[in-house]
Amino acid sequence: MRAEANQDEPDFFFFTTISICFRFFFCVCRSRSKMVQYCRVQGCHHRNDRDKHVQFYRLPKVVQCQGEQTLALSEERRQLWLARLKQNLHGKNLENVRICSAHFVSGKKADLYQRDNPDWAPSLNMVEVNTSVGNSDGSMLAVARF
Ligand SMILES: [Zn+2]
Image (cartoon, rainbow, N blue to C red; front, top):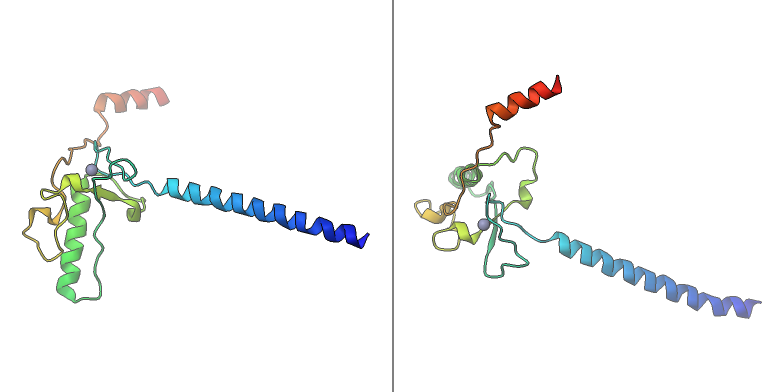
């Protein structure tokens, strides 16, 4: 009886290992597919898995530990990037926001200290977005509710 039990054990571990491997690869595939980055600019459809020639930039971070001047400059730059996006990002995870190189004159963002550089913030192909709801649509919805 013990001999049979011993023979069964390797099979059990073998199948457990295989199932763990499958789960691992499944998770890796899922996490990879989640890492697709899209350009946040309205009307721009660039994504990192398809448009290999395009660079994707995160929102510039506020630099806190390099003096007041750097802090103010980096804060101003971040706010300018957000303002240029012209989107309501309240409650959104800004860590996931990406802006592609198509919106920079030279094709890449400028250094933090190059404030006079046109690429200090994205400027090309930034579509004006009208986020306000039309009056007629608004009143129609209001009527429909009552
Ligand atoms: Zn873009």
